[in-house]
Amino acid sequence: MSPQTLNRWLEEDAEAEDAYKQGLESERKALHNMLYKLAIDEKHPASAMFLLKARHGYREGDQSEQSNRVSVTFNLPGAMTADQYKTIEAVANTKPKRIEPNAD
Image (tube, rainbow, N blue to C red; front, side, top):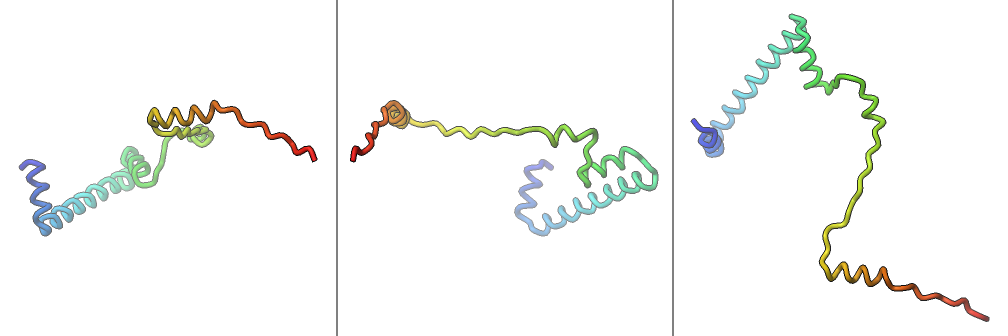
């Protein structure tokens, strides 16, 4: 059966979708249990490392360089029309009027 057909059936039949989800969860539990037993009972290092990384966020190596890294973000304005640009350019090119102090 094609994936498209399966997806259509699951969308049309709520009971089939529930059964499918239960089957996936059953498979996930069985695989997790097997992996856990390999890691703990059999002392299988690759299984233990996978569980550490997948479930506990473990990352290998020295992470100190990551914590000291500087990040700079530039937020640029979006594109503007030619008329908008001309208006901004005209304002930028006008000389400010000099304000004379009052001679009281």
